Image (cartoon, rainbow, N blue to C red; front, top):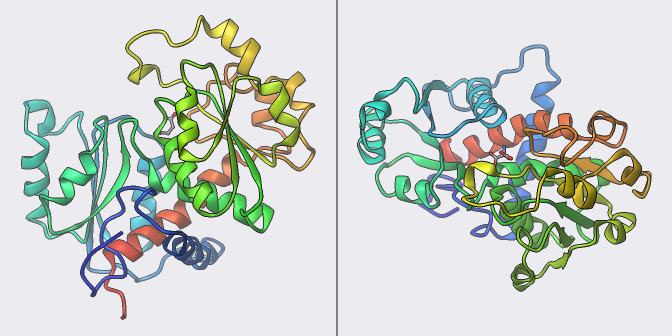
Length: 312
Ligand code: ASP
C-alpha cells in the first residue's frame, strides 16, 4: 500500500507489496471492527457520505457479498456492478467503465477480474483507492488477510506454525497471497499437490514442496485446501478426479492423521468429495465459516484504511 499522506494507505493490490507491519496493522484494525459485529446495530459512520464501487468481472459469492456488506456497515453509499447485465456486455472497455464510475468520485473501487494485473491498471485510471478482489491467478489479498486473521484468532500467533496448502497452487491466487502473507508473519509453509500443479520452482519463494500428502499431514498446524481452478486451466493438469482424490483429497480416513488441534481451512467454493470430504468440511476442526465471518471485518478494515480519511 502506497500513496498520499492524507490516507493511511492508498491501494491494496497485492500481499507481496506489504510488509509485516502493514499486514499486522490491517489485522489489528479488523479486530476493532469485529467488535462491531457483536453489536445489535452493526454499523459505524466511518465512511458516511463516501462512495464505494464494487466491480466484479468474474463469478463471486463470498468476496462480493462481503465487500458490499463491509461498505454498508461503514455507512458508505455502495454501487455494485457485475459484468453480466452491465455495459461491459455491450463491449465497453475496462478503462471506460472505470472512468465512467470515477465520475461519481468514489473513495474506493473494488475490482475482480480474470486478468492478471487488472487492479494495478485500474489504479492508473482513477483517483479512487483501488482494492484488488482477485486478478486472475495473481493475487487475492483480502482472502489471505482473512485467512491470516482466522489463524491468528484461533491459534494466538502465526509465527512458528506449520501451514500446509494443498491442491491447485499453480492457478490459485489464494495460494499466492497466502504464501506471501504467511512467510512475512513467520509461518513455515509446505505446498502439496501433483507436480503439474505444485512444481518445485515454488521453493524459490521460501516454501517446501511435497507430493506426498500423507507424510506431511501429521505435522500440520493448519491445512488450507484449494479448489481445482478449471476455469484457468487450458489442459488437464492431473490424470482424473478419482486419481486426484486418491492422492490429494482430504478424505475422512486421511483426516485421522491430522493433529486434533489442526485447523481445516478452505477459501470456498468447496467441491465436496473432491478436495475435502463433507465430514471434515463441516466437522469440529473446520474454520471455513469463521473465514467467511472474518472476511467482513477484514474488508471493513481495508476499506477504512484505503478509502477513509484517516487522521495523521
Ligand atoms: N474464491 C476464491 C477465489 O476467488 C477461491 C476459488 O475460487 O477457488 O480465488
